[in-house]
Image 1 (cartoon, one colour):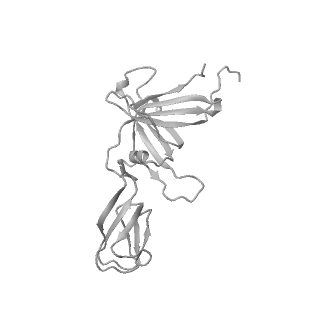
Image 2 (cartoon, rainbow, N blue to C red):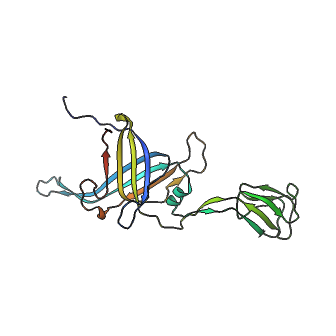
Image 3 (cartoon, rainbow, N blue to C red):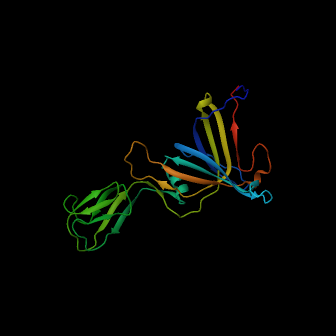
Amino acid sequence: MITNQPETYYYGQGSVMLARRDANGEPENWYWVGDVSALSLAINVQSFNHLESYSGNKTPVRRINTAKDGTVTSTWHEFGSKNLALLLYGEAAIIPAGTVTGETLPSAITAGQMLALKYQQVSNVMIGTLVEGTDYELDPAFGMIKFLTAQPTAPSVNYSYAESFNTTIFTDQPPELAFRYQSINLAEGGANVLVELHRIKFDPAAAIELINNGNELAGMQTTAGLLFDSAKGKDPLLGQVGRFVHIGAPA
């Protein structure tokens, strides 16, 4: 077979970036989501076939498209608060360092009972007149206390705690975002390929790996739906869903 058609293959690596959209649908501030080990775009069309009624075979003579949609699936490895808040439909906040005076624990504590303080990464812990190592053991990183002796009355605890980063679950609505994938095509000498999706919305994380036994880092399985962006008009270079751009070689 003789052909003049150039071959273009793809083996990609690159950076996934997201941005909130302003009132006009334009990206406000791009941020990198970190290491993404898998990224796929799926385009779907809903359709039906019309079957003819004149040949006796009822064969399809028309295929009618009725709807179009798409999804972006990816695996993220950056477990920072910003990513977690997006995929958990939550809110990220910094808990500043501070001190606690008189945090009350339950009464009638038995020997061997384990209780958690309100904060973590604690220091300068004082539980009344109790002695660490004799009356209790402390895990300062997690703010856990294991009592070695029974305490019939409710003890109170004074302590300091360090700054931490907090992410809630299901306390916020997911935003509509703009998507940008800046990739390097290793199959074509490192040529750059840009993928832009104007308007997407993430589902909650399908899975977040929390215990690992293999030889791979934990990942978060994500899915986002493509949305039509009427604000883009009918610009043939932008489209109203997104676009691929094979970027020319630098001069």
